[in-house]
Length: 350
Image (cartoon, rainbow, N blue to C red; front, top):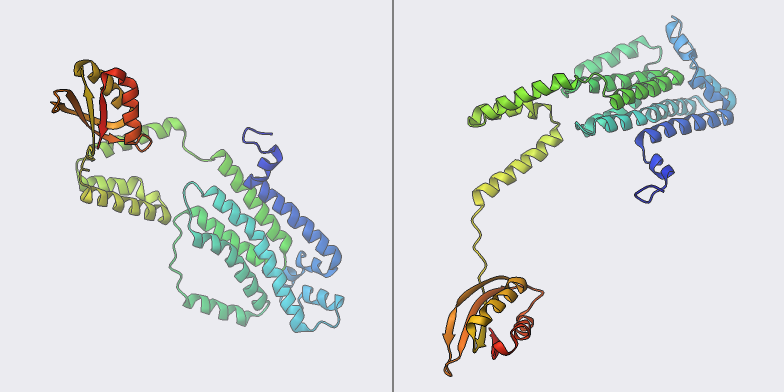
């Protein structure tokens, strides 16, 4: 058992890297089992379709032929649908762990949800399009014209995001040409290399170079702190530029809240001392220290307002107090009677 009461195996199972490795193992085992049940699926992992694309003659789809041989009653439309589904599902299964690694390695810096979803959807679309185009030059040119007519304005702020997108296209192409083994190798090796770079923090500047540069930035920021415009520009250049949209939105909401607090904040009025304690004593000089010692420990706040004389001539010490919820007025009066004894002939609260 560990310090937090969990077994070591449970903690290992929560490691995201272990989960990614286990996913690849289960995916390989499931593929091998499916291969034994449906031998025709082997065509998805061969390079026969790629060889057919490299030739000038239009050849039949090897996976379609394998499906037709294993199920003669299956018509060409059904076989084509199954082929498309297998290739698109394969692209999805191979890019899913890549998206997990992307989220893991970008958790500190921040990432956009749209990029994560694109990493999964893009290879599925590419695989389907490649299956549609096949060996047709006319379809390929038509597709190029359609893509050229669509303007993609989403820019990637990090060069590593562009590499992830390029990998998604590569996996989709490999799945589309039915070379799933190449797609699996690309997915696995890419994740291994990215995790190694992330774990070792490869390429980071040494501390003896980062320290002086950070100190110079701090000095410049402090020097510009009294000039609002220059300070904001420096803050935008040094900090805000490297933040993700989600982080900027959270920072903006926090800044608006701070501005509201500064404008609307008003000094809080002190709470009144609403309860009056009157202690009648024949010897007020000796009773007063004991009364104030009790008040110091039993109430939130107190104030001595003076000593008066009643109609019989006895001294009455008066205090204004703010009670605690745990010590109501009757309890406080009983505590004073117990502490003062014969020095108090009466205790009154109102």
